[in-house]
Image (cartoon, rainbow, N blue to C red; front, side, top):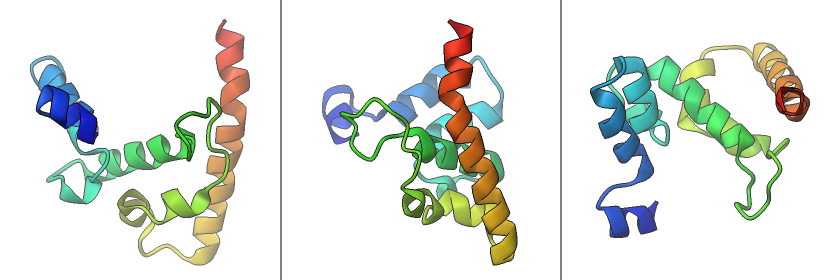
Amino acid sequence: MELEKEILGMDHAELGALYLKSNVCGHFCASCQFHHHPDAVRGHSRTVAAVQVADMMIRPPDRRQRQPCRGGRGRWMASAGWEILFAGQSEGEQTIAIASLSRSLARIPAILESLL
């Protein structure tokens, strides 16, 4: 993101939001612009939070890797997005959400492969 700002004068989130602003609704613009900082958005915070968690779940800890994270839960569970989505839920409810998200993440390669 620092290199994007140095070269373009903005990062990919700001650039995407500018592009989307004239073509789509507020949810998409906010999700694009604030997906790294859902706690900074006004309105649409749950949608943006979900995008942040999804982005963190599929991003490898080391960008040179090509496989989804499939782990590293600490990273996305410590995110502002996770807090927005699951604040106030019991540990048991969060455990169920983690299991469901982990199963969905494990299915992504097969889903994508079936599309080819």
